[in-house]
Length: 201
Image (cartoon, rainbow, N blue to C red; front, side, top):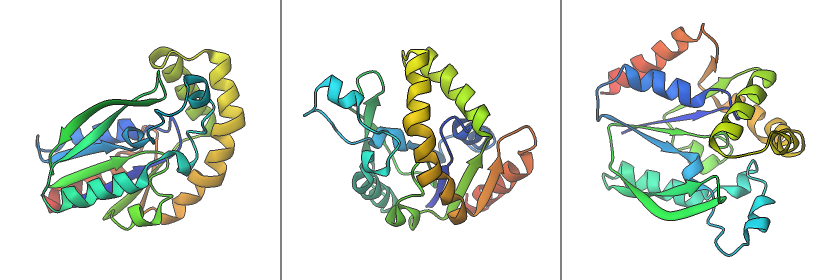
């Protein structure tokens, strides 16, 4: 099994890159795991307390479970991937049965911050985008898909997202095997990744 980690700041276009890679590959041979599914279970907290959690800090991710699941997939076993709700800031209690594939892509803003997880990746990719571009995308997504108020998004960006990005995410570039600039000229980097995957398949 080839495991590929795709990281980068919020709104950098990781999902777009994942979709560009998937589009060119055989159906059913590549699986995707999102870091967002592995936010810690916070059922013991009230909604108000969950709202105060810093979701851009590595502590908010259940890396132990994600690592266990990846190892299980690597050994040929299916996993039950948690389902997370951005509306309630908690896991829903439902799971998605995820079978092992020849190639597993793990994507998320913080996945390169954890050394044990990093060691499981055969290829580490960092998607880079301009900070203004990332803020605009985050604004559009959070107001349209996650029911957030524009002031709430801007406040969170200023007080949490940007400082966490500078502290934890940007420095992770040094661990990346490939850095993809997320603009219309990123086709060469995408082609390299696809070539690596096709060789494995």
